[in-house]
Image (cartoon, rainbow, N blue to C red; front, side, top):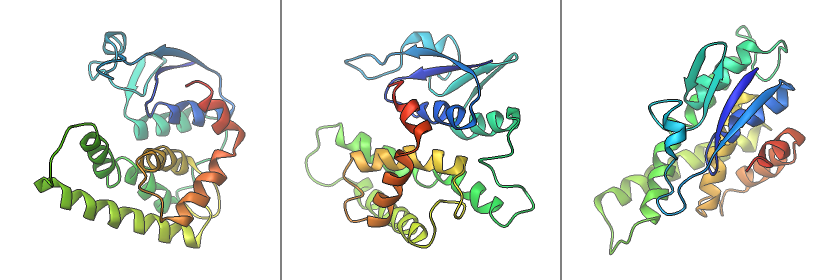
Length: 202
């Protein structure tokens, strides 16, 4: 059985969501952020030296990084779902968005988040770059979702699980106010029963 080390207010929700979608059995070990520093506790660092979530344990493997963890779980699943077959047109769109969430989108969103957490006076050199990247990425995403229901086409996949959590962070920072197709997409995927079950873990 897969053990998920779940950190509150983290992207480890992705892992639980995927497992719920696949109806795979799993255990959850909860780790709580320090209320003052918001950092992960040392208990998570004893599992993996990066002291980050998500982390899973399974059959002697200890694995970190959202995309790698999701791909590993899909490899363990007996269901042929949530990942297009490699000979399909949707596969490489799936692969692009699976990595886009933490690659292209992750940097500007998390940087913007951190910028809001510090006391600042006036613009800093990084502001213009982050604003440009956020606009570029979110425009691309909104235009994509204007043409299709999900990121790999018209069928929900694990790429949507990756992208949704990143977009929720952007939404919490008021970055999606003028992105109607992203907002409609989020409402659609957040209504999924597996998503609701995953969110119940905190």
